[in-house]
Image (cartoon, rainbow, N blue to C red; front, side, top):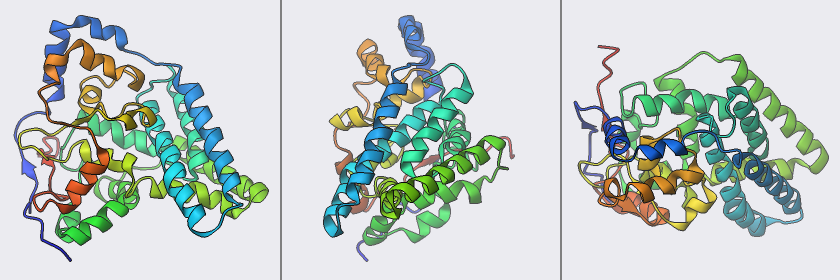
Length: 318
């Protein structure tokens, strides 16, 4: 089963999350950063192009079998569908259109190529992750105590990484359940309707390529390293980390995560400019150049596990 993780509880702090204060400090020194705020329409053609590529790849893959099908699904399919997930991350912040519903509609289009509905529900919880980072119950990005207690050895952490899609889908339902809204119902309906049509015209194997690619791309996959790199405490005293490697090109720069949390109103296309304008605020922070290396370290370092997160008390519940 491997060595047991030495970290057996969350890091509890009484301080506020660090991004609000850093944003104020940066804007006081570099007010021109506000010029980067607002939607970027380039997201529209990018997402549509990725959707078209993924669907074409799914149809092509019906001619493949066995390991060739799986390898293509994990590698390119996993990358493209995860790219769409991070497109939906951008859309959750209304960073393509000024009108919310247009961003949600584009998110539903992206979900069609992933085979699974998620964009509306993701937005509902993700914005709370920004407003209440690490806060008990509210921030469902933080693992549960059960995850920390069960996945506490090297081998078990391998399974935890593979099961990331399940945890991200189910954790909110257990930790902070919310009633379904009409937009979520529309998201589910449109995705299922497209899945049925896609399977009817191109075969179940084509649909399976989309769904499997989405799930595989969220597990042990290079681009999925951001799930761990963003907020798992690899350096004591720091709770958000950026990644400055090449995979930012296929993830809408989500690796610039300190920059994103400091300025969630700036689209991913422009996040590198934040660091360029204000390097004195970012260059000394611990950061990564390899997401694969982050996954490796998470699995094999005995001091890192699901408990390696910063948590804050829920003052509203007190």
